Structures are given as structure tokens and as C-alpha cells.
Amino acid sequence: MRYAALAALLFASPALAQDRAAEIDFQNSLEDAQRAAKASTEKQAAIERALVAMNDGPEAGGVVVAYLREHGISVKPAAQTEAVKTTVAAGKTVITLSDALPAYPRVYSPLIAKEIAALMLADMPVCAERSYMRRAVAARVWTELGGEPAKLPVIEPLTGDKVAAVSDEIAPWADKNGAEMALYKIGEAEKLKSIPDLLDSAKDAAEKAKLDAANARFVAFLIDEKLARQAAGLR
Image (cartoon, rainbow, N blue to C red; front, side):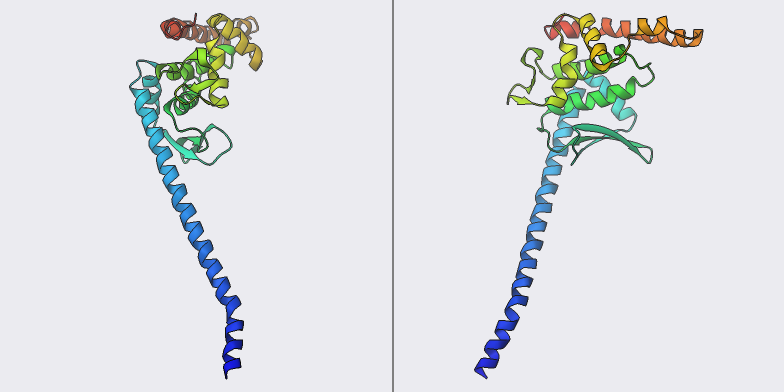
């Protein structure tokens, strides 16, 4: 009888071990899910702080947030390889920020501004001027929050964080030789023609009129941003 009980225990042990292993796996999965949910909540809170900071900005940040709210665009953290991307599903536009990014306004805000600026400028012809304007919006939002062009590629001066996706976007605008040189370098780097070049090859009056309007818009943009460049220590 004693041997029978021992045999039963031995045969039962593997099953008990499997049950215990499954229980441990479930508990670990539950804890992982809880940690992920907490991290996502914290990231979302950081995004909201960034939007508040942008909205309190004197110029560019407020324009970006106003556009975002007017068009019902949401901003969320996500597990993705891209630092930032914009998607449209069921008529809803969503900007997602990588959950691997440092959760600081000076990191989030220029990336959000970059995506919003691309939407704001979508009606302009593809040209160096449009790319300059997009980069300028992102850079101005960053400088309004205390970003310092002289310290690039450092994006968050308080921690020394470097985020290539941000510095790569705004650094061309921060050219110390002035806006004209910045425009030239952006066009060269992205293989984009300038509006004057496009005008030279315009096929008809309608295309020329569209380019003239884009050029006037760009000139007005340069005038508007002049003080912002000066405040950032740039020409």
C-alpha cells in the first residue's frame, strides 16, 4: 500500500510541475501586461504635457496645437520602429510616437510639429521651400520650449539626450549662415528643386500661378520667422 501511494505521487509530480510552471508563466505575463499598461499611461501623460507646453508657446507651438485640435488629430504612444508616423483609419488621423523615445516635451513636440506641418503644407508644390518650412515649424516649436541650436545634436539640454530623429529634422534649419543657405542645403540634401527653378520649367499659366502663390507664401513665412531665428541665435 505504501509503495502504491509513493508511485501515485511520483506519477503525479510532472503534472503538478507543469501546472505550477503554467501558473508562473501566467503571473509573469500578467505582470508584464500591467507594466506595459502603466508605461503606456505614463507616456500618454507625457504627450499631453508636451501638447500643453506647445499650446503655451508664443507662436509656432500654439499654431500646431490649434490645427491638431481643429482637425481632431490624436497623438498616442506606440511600439514601432519609426520615431513618429501619421496614419489615417476610418477618417481619423492619428500621430503615433515610438514608446522608445525619451518622454520629454523637447523630444515629443518637434516630432508632433513635423507631422502637423506636413499636413498644413500639403497643398504646396513639392519643393525645397516646402521642406524648409516643415523643418522650420518643428525647429521653432523646439526652440520655444528652450531647445538650443548651439547644443545640437543634444535635444534635451537638462539630460543631454540625443534623438537623431529630432536633430536630423531641425538641424538643417539651424544653419548659422542664414535661412538662404539652409534652404539651399535642404534642397541639395533632398534633391528638391526650388520654386524659381520650378517656375523656369512651368508648363502653363495655371502651374505658374500656383508656384507664384507658393513663393509668396514662403516669403511671408520667412518674414514671420525672422525674429524666431534671431532669438535662437541664428541669422
